[in-house]
View 1 (spheres, rainbow, N blue to C red):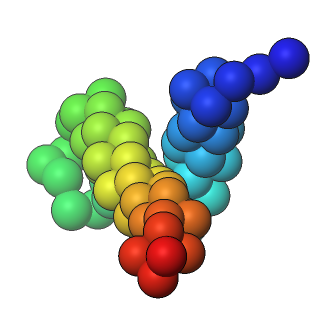
View 2: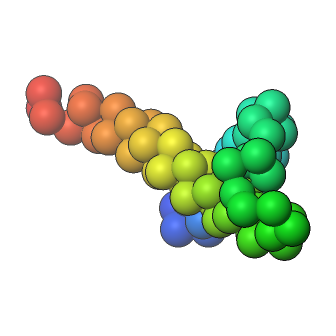
Amino acid sequence: MFGGIEQQTLLTMISHLIFIVITWYALQGFQIEKLMKPNHVFQAKLMLILLTITISSTVSNFFLDYLFWSQRIPSFFQ
């Protein structure tokens, strides 16, 4: 049903979504509104969303790279 590219694409999308949820949950513990100027709640929420995307993308790419590189290790020893 799925070829190599399709599996990798699906795995990448799922990984990014999972890490977005995990990062969003983790960042909910911070009160970023207190770091912002008063009455700038929208900017604080926007910053939280952008920070979530940035962190989750970086972490997801790290794990995906590690996974794909570890799958290529056996070819080095042939």
